[in-house]
Image 1 (tube, rainbow, N blue to C red):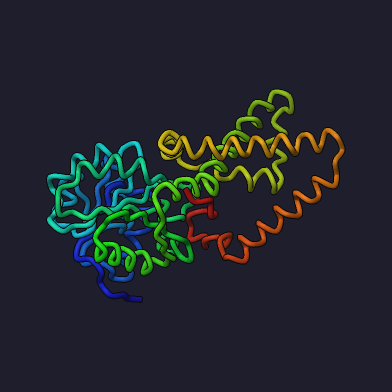
Image 2: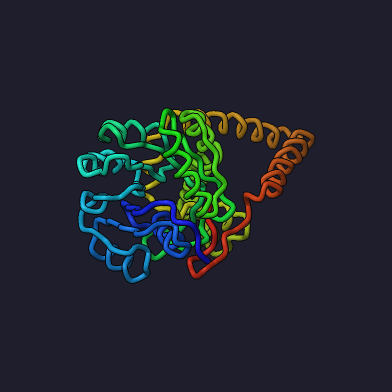
Length: 309
């Protein structure tokens, strides 16, 4: 299955789940003449080559971006500034730099000051992922029927159009959003739910002393499915919360208000309120299903689909 080449050379900086899935799909469908990668560790670089995620790997990010017309930063948000400072002097004139971070305002502030004049910056956020990480976790179908959100601000329209074509070729639906609106939206749909899931696992761990491990042993569908996303990469999520703190705290405040209202209804025996609340939220869940956003990615030997970042 071939596709039209969109970029001559794509450099993927960081070779985990997202970059690996991008590389496999780009190579499979001929979307670039060459895919070059960089990872910090030799073990990751060897795995990336063995799995065919890239055509070649480089020991430094600066070497990897040389001559690339698209550079995608696939590193944790907290590492963006350091990487951008390293690659800035080595970027080709007219190249596009993008990223896959799930926070956009912080990424723009970290990356943009290091990019030279004539290099186009088009931030991106693919809403796709699993609870697995690392170079062994990628698969080319990861982005099928998932959204990729762009926050281009004043970026060159041709650069935005070209990157849009790439993400569509990777299988994604693409939409452009205002930066701050993006960060608030993902705080609702992803960041706060992940924090709540991490917290629930922490509660279960605390209860092990009381239940002698039964919370884990008897994990039924609800607890298992709800907490699956708590297995996601801890470094990535640490950086997400530190770099999207205002939006996340706003949503957590609203969540706490809703939770207090439900606590009061349970305490006072207000069955009507509970029934109405659950009816309304079930309708929202059905809307998600009808929009096709709960479809699990196929298990191509990479494990079940987890929530995106």
